[in-house]
Image 1: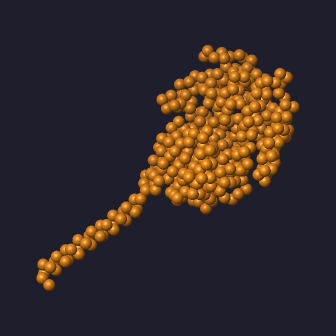
Image 2: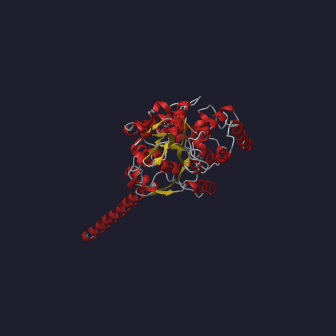
Image 3: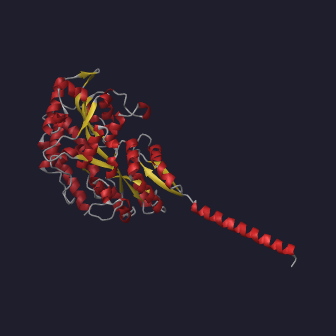
Length: 451
């Protein structure tokens, strides 16, 4: 064979090898750089819900460049319908935020992935606050369906200028008796500060979305409850539940709360407190974030009270000092085609640093025990109150029927304030027991149907 022909064949073979090997390499690189898009539904947990979460996820994208996250923010008012519709239709995101009281109901629909075997990969149940871990599944079930993300706990906000003026201290409001005595002293002082008459206490009334949450600590701290220990019976129609309700109502009937107050919701009460209308309110840690954040960032740091307030735990009742503890969990829909990538997102959001960063942006408390070691939760003594409060926090029972029970309680306790305001001869135990008896019948009916 002519040597030039041989050289030509050799050159052609070499070129063919290089072309095909190059294609093979490009093919492999293309496969390894394939992007997975994880869809995530959240609620407006902060002032800029999508932007704030994207900021927190920046660290995730550095270590997971092939996972893209598409975040959609749902309004709380529409979220329940959107989520239940998604659960039934199968047209659902990969990851969904669920309020802790929603977990059992959505889980009972069989719509969520079983995450039980995954939990040990992030430290197991001990990785989370014990009280909030109870919301990760249906009560009594060993199947984990929702991982705790953040915690909403409550505490008492009080005006230091008012307390200093009247010689009151934090220790004076540590018990029910002391708290009532302090409110009475503020009421009798008839204070005018910064051009405003100071009412002793601000509480949201019948139009609030937190009606049941507002009452729960007072009922629990009197030894009462909503359901029995086995969650099969109602505990509404009991002396202890009536006692807790009676104490809370007495704060209104004794004149420590204005009538106008009971027409307002939580946001309006917060705004009034910030501007000097009330001496005391009860609220979540997001209020602390608001009072320590500049107006340019959507906060209330420029208000009158922002430099004149402190925080204390709920006053101790006859049977305890629990605070209401809610929050939200993250779950993966069973129909997700990106379960592995979705789990990586949840694993990241429930690790220490992202937990701390998200709490700074949202104002909520972390669900992860280790996150509380960060100085952010102890350097401000007011925030440290929440760090202690979550240890005594109580969540509602994680049972499917609670999704039907809570709206009944919200309606009954919302109407209650109308009865309280209309009662000419007071609203005592007789009236309270009648109210609880009616609510009890409705709750029993639901429990019977869901046996």
